[in-house]
Image (tube, rainbow, N blue to C red):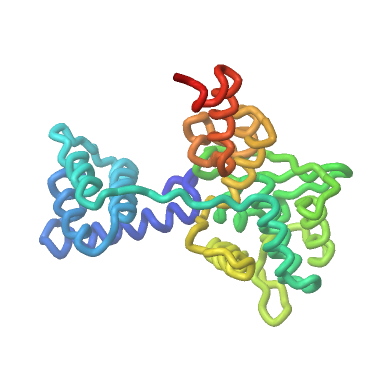
Length: 303
């Protein structure tokens, strides 16, 4: 499969494609095809068991795999578009925005990690580098020690190709006087790991021994939810992109331009960045009414 896809995306797409293959075989269809009527029938049966997001993933996977296998994908009568539109209308699709993890909350989460020990050091470094570079979970666990360069005042991290960039990119993390400094956390973990030159940055640890394989992206998800629970938060209100949203929104609140924020998040357009930016509670209303007062006084004084 295309190496430009994140490993987790490749896994999900392959699972969706195999599901479609099995369905075709059960229906007596010799092999999966790109016929929109066939795909619509498959999705119709699936819709009785799964939600809209799963259907959208299956459709994206089939479209991608058809292209990979040289199958022309055309839908001149818009069968698939009309089907998905009907699903959204029927189920009243209204995606709920997940809450961000702001620096204050991140600090509270880290306070619940033990002060010492390899697991605590690894987890602290993973969360801080994920926050500082606005990384996805799959991008965090994909980092290897050969992707890391320690300089006197900053850390250089090479990020492997992923959803937002088809080529490897290099990001800088400065050393800052803060308890949330990713440079310090990574340096401490590096020393505790006996200064490795290769292997995963965030390996599994069993019985106190560092393993050769990396933790899974699911581990990062479980770690975040466990720490949120310890902070008396509702884990379900937060999602996979809460760390990314946290750094992007915080930068936005501090007055950084969209162009500068996109250098951190690696979004190609402002349109892709906007869903990650969240307003401060009440701030927009305060600005609106402050502007109103400046223009003409209080509402009650107008006749």
